[in-house]
Length: 389
Image (cartoon, rainbow, N blue to C red; front, top):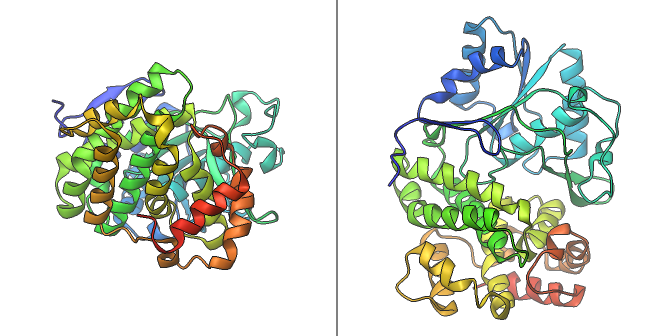
């Protein structure tokens, strides 16, 4: 078994530094990558947390001026990124440190995509047939630091943003833009409140389950997804109940990272719906995923026959049938006090028709193991409104 209190350096799929206390290396890392004036990007909710001041002070101690941009919504928007780009250029910055949960990192990654070039933000839409013809030098050097064990987005340039004109979430990225480094420091997650630990942890678990459920044959992603399921299912409750359990925090952070890499294979209906619920109602992404997971598992049941035994083994269950897996997931959600319906998240029932229409257009729907129509998505949303499990 790994010792999550011990540091380690990995090179796949990008350079990763794991270990307690390694955030203190951020200044030296900036120098290594010739970043002399980083913009620290986070979200409004994280702005006053200790790790933001720590990053700034470590940079200052290494002779690096820096500033913080935190005018970022829980579900980042194109307008947030436009403001961030202005701050980046007006401040003469030459690098981005994206730090926080999914919203902070998505904003930082998006600013790194547009900060040095004149391309429109939506030119980087993941679903476009071609990315803008830009070289790596056209992008801002980027370092990612996750402060929740949830999104797992620290190894790619992908970012989920709300298109404020269309009222939908869209994924942006560029094939040649990669973070130069990810720092996984479990100490920065210790003070995360229990509810956010649960919600972000569920986000990571959904990433792994949905990625593994995608029918494409990708043994690399499948192996990462199963190990993520093992680590998360074995550590999440402890991380929630005992926030200072650094072993559990470390296992969750690594599991989240693995899950985030695994979903390069694709995701599924949980995310297709959750993206659009978040865009319409500004709900917490991980919490929305957690609510929607059980009905999607039931919807996909017949297509998961060969995969369920492996998921059960990863979760350490004594039985390897769908009922055991599903019951274990429901018991975990109950133990974490996840709400039972979208109504508990203040999602208006009147929005469900529009959300279903938009979810049908989401790329994650196309990689779900069972195809779906707008009507079927609407049925799942309706089922999930009052009692998703």
